[in-house]
Length: 239
Ligand code: ATP
Image: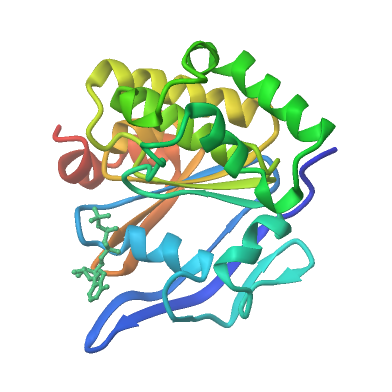
């Protein structure tokens, strides 16, 4: 029963001075659904996520999650609305222990029994984080840091996770591991919005995708349809 909210985005725009990075993007993420945004470098994927989070100035005619209107919600309050964010490049605190990094993910809710249970749950889901709990996060491999960044976001018990380019810098094997983690999250009823340059990963993890070019949605559809689309295959799968 944890997930009952839909993300609704209508006419989202981001402008950096003279550059319009996101042009009237509209989409929804239904409860428990995994949606992908794919596109080349610079297409506006990261700006879209940062705009949803309130990390860059944006306009939208609708930006809501469940009953909450998020158009004026600052980034630091998103977690209270059930939205978790895993930024591009992971941004773990490399000098702090794995466990401290995870605990920071729960800070807005204080530290108590429920947070301790959540921490145990994360060690169960990612045993390697449990094994390395006292090590500094900087000692982890790229793939382990990605797990840590996802684990940290999970500590706030989000209903929706925004995930920016989890495949970045990971070997193909670790991309497969990441895919398994994402499928696992969705199986648990979490909603997911995944931004990826790696279309193969996005198609594997989601049921529906948007294709963005120059800040605009140029195609969208079920993963199945997009996989079969000759244009998408040429441009994003290299086939
Ligand atoms: P990436 O693969 O790098 O994540 P992306 O698809 O996420 O690419 P964005 O990073 O959102 O694309 O960038 C979209 C456009 O906005 C690009 O033209 C980029 O140069 C521009 N841009 C991004 N951030 C800024 C900024 N802070 N100031 C000015 N222009 C920016």
